Image 1 (cartoon, rainbow, N blue to C red):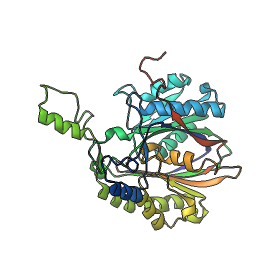
Image 2: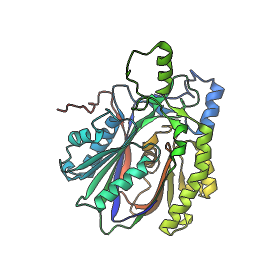
Image 3: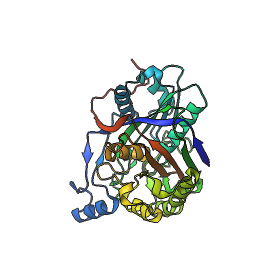
Image 4: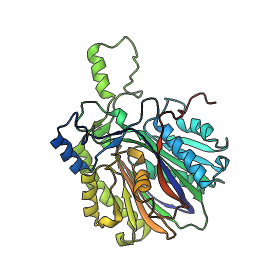
Length: 363
């Protein structure tokens, strides 16, 4: 699917990450030092940030959003749309976005909803928020992306443990009738759903016993099914098949050549995959962001986190033409080409352990 987004611009970004850092390279407790060094060289991941168990992805997003609203000097009452993109909802119900509305002080007239997407989620969230602004009297929106991917991992799964970290990012966008058009392309192929999956936890395969208590063998199987399964070979094959085509189609929709892009920021899956994509799409290194060394793969937060970390001083007074792309779990993918000139440069803060969690019953 293709979409032309009119009159919506990015106004600012803010990332929030846990203060707790872990590195298998520095602390090779599961891998040997040689193994850890090889993994780092291949994936580009040296360390990750891990959120304490008493906090959720929503808390990182709240911390980022509160700081961003303050830096933008936006009255929370002026925000008309909130999109929360996460695969780690606080509760089965209600939607976390509803609780965020109250916590952030947004008006009761605001449209707030959750979007359960991972690697492609940032691009989808930006598109959804933009369409809501374009087809309403709304002027401002917050797109909050966050996941606690580290909690989905088996403690002895050497294939996934070094890869995933936790983060939350808030992006502010607003309606501006004089702003240039943006161009977005999306796709979905559910035949790949099996290759990145957490099988247990939903209604199809519940963790809550439905009848008689489960036996030890069944509990052990459920324990594994409630953790992330990742087929790395299938992910790599999917990425090389779909993402170069996504880049070509998005460029064609925007009616520009790759050389006219100032920067490309794709989902930060791992360094090996991103380098293959860059070479296949013939994008120069200086126009291509790879930023997993300190954070790992942070799912829906990876694209805006990379912008906050690597491009904090990149956006000055000159408009930059940027391509943003996400791909992975689903299979799901999306790309957007947009002009960016944030009035607030992207930043990163650490969320303290004593941060007040988002609660079902709020003060």
